[in-house]
Image (cartoon, rainbow over all chains, first blue to last red; front, side, top):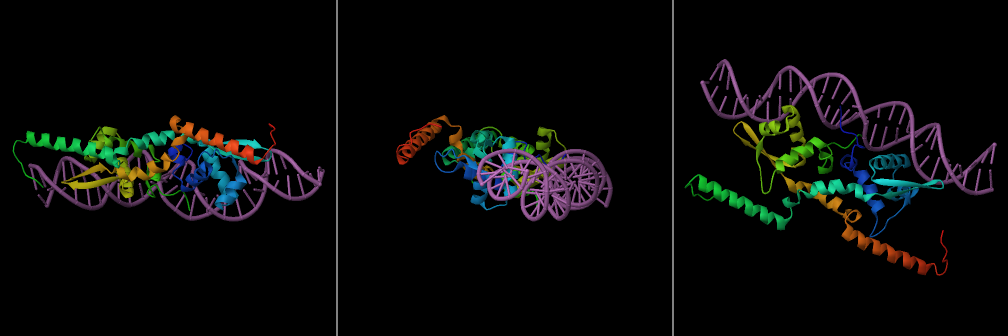
Length: 127
Length: 127
DNA sequence: TTGACATATTCCCGTATCGGCATATATTAA
DNA sequence: TTAATATATGCCGATACGGGAATATGTCAA
């Protein structure tokens, strides 16, 4: 066995910065359900066309983008829902930076510290 | 060049499922700022110790966990804030599954469609 | 048909992975 | 010191990546 293939899941696919870039430009501005052909993407990013096609291939396999043929073009569009598992996973760690939640956590720790003190009887020391 | 190293950033580090598992058990329950030694992690997961140590090494390099030596033990703890960039990035795609926001997006698209119609003056046709 | 355009695929190379196993290093105990 | 415990590191093999360049495939136009 080796590293899990980039096509294993969304986590693996978005590990590559360039793939995130592609998703980014496909997402575009607000409400832009942009359908873009490969040439547009190539020009937008300025990368060699095969490279773009290959990255699109990975994103396709994972379902992060969908394609539809339109004449000799292939129109790619973002399939954002496929990022949801990533979102849900990382969201579980929100409390580590969200101040609102952090305060709750800190208080919980404080309470735990106090009960520990009780168990050890005295040992009142600060710092 | 090859694939970006797993130690490049949080994105690369969490691409590996086992690394996510480790983070998961280090996160533990509510308010648990658990400091766990390697042996505990090994027993918890049931993986070979070197494997655990190596994954911890990657997580360490990326800053997702911190270590502190305690006797002959090394106490690992989660450094959740390091996941924030991932959260922020993926959060930008929230609108693709969040129904609340989706409605807003749909309305925006509707408005755009309407203004496009105005620009093209007549050209009322379909297809 | 021939040719131009759009996109995907193939081959090559260098690299870094992950897992397994063995072993080195560090720390405490006897 | 020697032994035992805790953890990290080194080496191996297999894999597959990502970039580059060339080329194949597919589609429309003349």
